[in-house]
Length: 65
Image 1 (cartoon, rainbow, N blue to C red):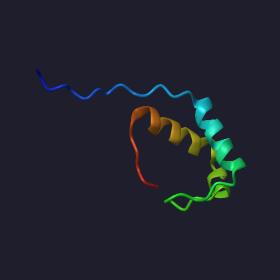
Image 2: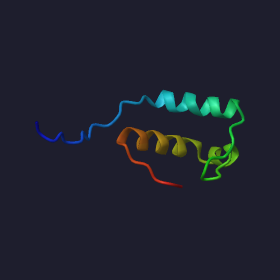
Image 3: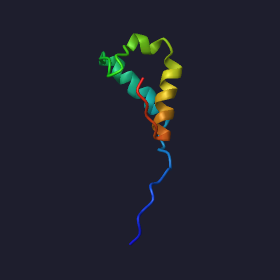
Image 4: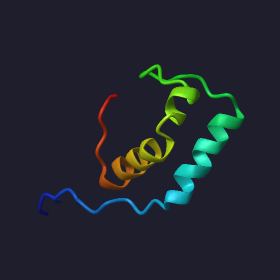
Protein backbone atom coordinates (compact mmCIF):
# COMPACT_ATOMS: atom_id res chain seq x y z
CA UNK A 1 0.00 0.00 0.00
CA UNK A 2 1.35 3.37 -0.98
CA UNK A 3 0.67 6.78 0.43
CA UNK A 4 -1.96 8.55 -1.60
CA UNK A 5 -1.11 11.96 -2.91
CA UNK A 6 -3.51 14.85 -2.29
CA UNK A 7 -5.51 15.76 -5.34
CA UNK A 8 -5.23 19.32 -6.55
CA UNK A 9 -8.31 19.25 -8.74
CA UNK A 10 -10.52 22.27 -8.18
CA UNK A 11 -14.14 21.99 -7.20
CA UNK A 12 -16.75 22.45 -9.92
CA UNK A 13 -19.01 25.15 -8.48
CA UNK A 14 -21.21 27.09 -10.90
CA UNK A 15 -21.17 30.86 -10.36
CA UNK A 16 -24.97 30.67 -10.26
CA UNK A 17 -24.78 28.78 -6.95
CA UNK A 18 -22.70 31.54 -5.36
CA UNK A 19 -25.28 34.10 -6.55
CA UNK A 20 -28.16 32.00 -5.16
CA UNK A 21 -26.37 31.65 -1.82
CA UNK A 22 -25.90 35.43 -1.67
CA UNK A 23 -29.61 35.96 -2.42
CA UNK A 24 -30.58 33.60 0.41
CA UNK A 25 -28.31 35.35 2.89
CA UNK A 26 -29.71 38.74 1.87
CA UNK A 27 -33.33 37.50 2.05
CA UNK A 28 -32.68 36.15 5.55
CA UNK A 29 -31.10 39.45 6.59
CA UNK A 30 -27.84 37.60 7.22
CA UNK A 31 -25.59 38.81 9.99
CA UNK A 32 -22.00 39.86 9.48
CA UNK A 33 -19.51 37.02 9.69
CA UNK A 34 -16.12 36.89 11.36
CA UNK A 35 -14.96 39.67 9.03
CA UNK A 36 -17.83 41.87 10.29
CA UNK A 37 -18.79 42.66 6.68
CA UNK A 38 -22.41 43.78 6.44
CA UNK A 39 -24.64 43.01 3.46
CA UNK A 40 -24.59 46.71 2.61
CA UNK A 41 -20.80 46.82 2.73
CA UNK A 42 -20.54 43.63 0.69
CA UNK A 43 -22.84 45.10 -1.94
CA UNK A 44 -20.61 48.14 -2.50
CA UNK A 45 -18.43 45.85 -4.65
CA UNK A 46 -20.90 43.00 -5.14
CA UNK A 47 -19.64 41.63 -8.45
CA UNK A 48 -16.01 41.51 -7.31
CA UNK A 49 -16.89 40.08 -3.88
CA UNK A 50 -19.02 37.29 -5.36
CA UNK A 51 -16.26 36.51 -7.85
CA UNK A 52 -13.70 36.26 -5.03
CA UNK A 53 -15.92 33.83 -3.13
CA UNK A 54 -16.44 31.72 -6.23
CA UNK A 55 -12.77 31.80 -7.24
CA UNK A 56 -11.51 30.84 -3.78
CA UNK A 57 -14.09 28.06 -3.59
CA UNK A 58 -13.15 26.46 -6.88
CA UNK A 59 -9.42 26.80 -6.29
CA UNK A 60 -9.56 25.56 -2.68
CA UNK A 61 -7.99 28.72 -1.26
CA UNK A 62 -9.29 30.62 1.71
CA UNK A 63 -8.05 33.82 3.23
CA UNK A 64 -9.49 35.90 6.01
CA UNK A 65 -10.66 39.34 4.99
